[in-house]
Image (cartoon, rainbow, N blue to C red):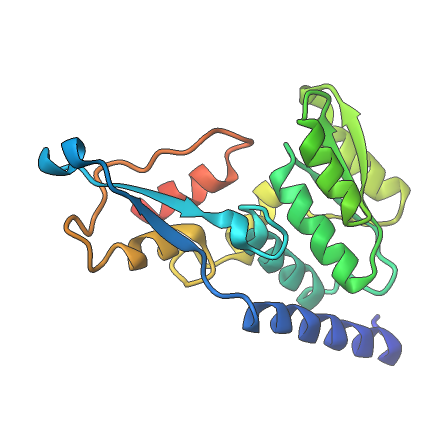
Length: 206
């Protein structure tokens, strides 16, 4: 049962996230002009997700996960947010946790880049480094121990984000390509993290 104080806090939290949406423009698709490739009919583009307020390519996903958790009664005032991540999702979730004044714990593989750990900590998050095979188990354990909410991006991303809508990277890429010489890309190439962005793009393409 959610009391009136909790309802008021959730309403304010949603307003803060909606304000973040309102002041955040879409990220740029940057064309790289390489004459020899252009003459061969090949155009290269780079999606610059670093321009999000959190500086992370998972900003859109984190925003959707927070809205999903708030609207489903999983996130309340004082709730500790826990996530299992290779770093990027945790950075954005740390940003939104800080925005809402919530404690945040990221369970990351021990080899996570030091710069990503610093970014998580910059937004007030705490990192727990474990063996890669243990990140999901440890995140669930911590969420239970802290009476927190395990964001669980891979379970809830599909529910939190409409893959057809305008709040995901795949839709943004294809929309921005519409006026180009080749509006439908032959290849979409990205580095591998835990696979969330690849799954979003793959689902959209399918």
